[in-house]
Length: 353
Length: 192
Image (cartoon, rainbow over all chains, first blue to last red; front, side, top):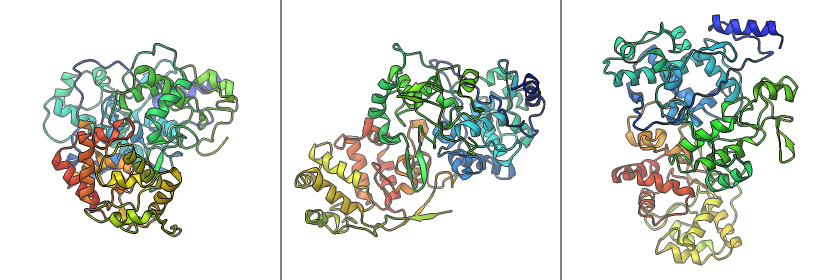
């Protein structure tokens, strides 16, 4: 990319959160590494209100729609989704569970400025990143009803939980769409006074339980072949010996972990560390923290040393994409079992490569 | 938007002679005879094979089924019998997809569709599929006898049923109260 164009993209992201996304001839990096910090003893997690308490009316309808898109993202298959995943696959309990990247935690963490690429990501841009990479799809346009709904759901979960925690009575204050899409990490974000007094904007952006908690690097360097044994013992009964998950009545509740129907080479989960953190905390389903940290890293390596859809930022040169976007724990552009990963990666959505 | 889903029985194989014995308790088409034998139709061949072997190796315990399973010796025979019952049709059930409903009047249905993560309890439909129709190693719950579903959840709790990967199902059963077990068994049994 030419320096001039890069500057323009950076400026566009900062100043025009609701303008059309910049030209996608060169996708900006909107799938930043997830925040991750170790779990602390005695942490108190935000507890969202039950879904039954979503209010009636237009705002409540957006919240409910957000929930529905979150657990059945396949409604958007072919439109914005290019694989067999649903948001809930990585964000457990419909985005409500702490330490499983709860969507309430994310809402208060955006917009976030990253010095590294000189860009501010609004909350809707962060969700757009999920569609582009995790869902191997096409980002819904800025301001679209889907992004509004998912933002409304995230906001309602988070604000409702904080209100309970800090003794603020009443319904969650309704926000207009533009406010919802920005996210809550800003000084002008409207919040009840009791919450403003209890938590600074920065403190709200670091709610306990957000992201996936970091686990230490394993004693031995992570190893995909050791991970294969972990996979056979603990993962394949649900995800299949071929890693392709299980569809029942056309619905993949047990998601494909690699191959053409899984997340692509730009998704956060292709990073070995991110996957290890997720797996250690959340797998096997309903029986978290059963694996050793070594097993979690090894099996994350095994899963991520397999071919998957191309990185959408790929412009025809594997080495260029690798050196620009893959300076982290991952296997893109490396040779595994005689295969140069990324060279013949499955197509992204829509199939342009 | 509900759709229906039943097993396809267009190419059901003829009943192998050894399956006749099974049919005396499970029904000749494996539709079940409550309380003698649960429904086998609608289960996958893979699942039925595994259960026969689990009875043979005492991972599952039942005074009637253990000797019955012993009459089926050898993989070929087990496959033949399992294939027969797996191919039998079951009454179709209206499929409710996850997310279709946001809130539930019935707390049992909510447990089936949303689980209870305050107890690390995943939704039943995560593994057993929408409306519990099952596939592969995950048995069909829809239309299964309530008394059988209940006895199995209790068997997981008691440890007299094992053989699940990582004790996943035992983990779920152990978190359920007696009342929840009763309610969830009736919920899936009565799905239509």
